[in-house]
Amino acid sequence: MSQRDTFHANFGVSPKVCLEVYKKIVYATGVELDPNSMLLTFFFLKVYPTTRVLSTISGKDRHSIMSEIWCIISIIAHLKKDVVSEKK
Image 1: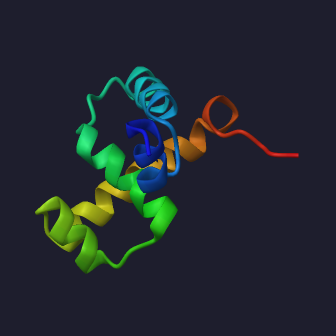
Image 2: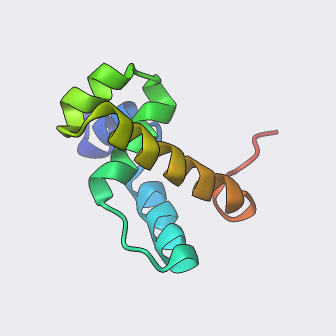
């Protein structure tokens, strides 16, 4: 399995898509996101793990990591027309 395939298996998107969404969020908000929080957001959307799992992976407390994840999800939702494809 290639590194790209492994990345996609873990996060549900390609590295290229992850980077493009990251850039669009930074451009739209003017805020530099923690890249790890972005990856955890994609991981959360793919796997929907418990807060305990996310806290263990990230090393952050449950409230902080979920707050970050839902903030990023909210931004992605507002950028839907630019970052979310609709499969037909």
